[in-house]
Length: 149
Image 1 (cartoon, rainbow, N blue to C red):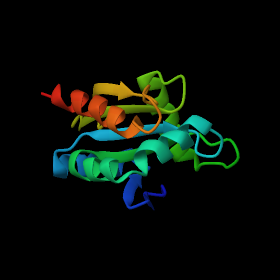
Image 2: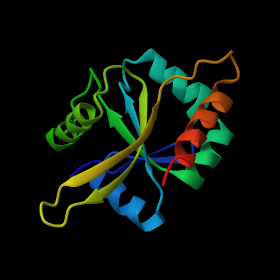
Image 3: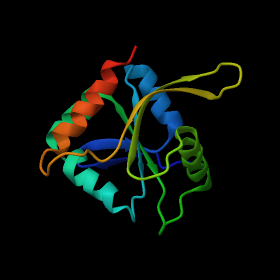
């Protein structure tokens, strides 16, 4: 059984692609996948503090996306099924550095039961002056959502 969700600063971050798929279908919202090294990646922690922990991002996320944490910790062992899922997503999106965020839609092939992923766009740590990271990140994220369909 995958650890399904964790509430962090008022946001629900899911870890199961199956669960995220179901919620995404019900809400018609795309998936916001945060590729992170939760226990070692300094830039991931900076992104969380500068963007994800801010009220503007929280409001935006609740309205626009379903949050998925795709974790690659070094000091703790993930359950095998979760590690396999995360490795598969890392390979699919060709993620080579952390933090990376991909926003995408998913469908399930009814014959093969495999997911079909439609990538909408990706984000990393925002290149902006200090204190403006959240605004810069949300501007980029909104541009990605605008291109959807």
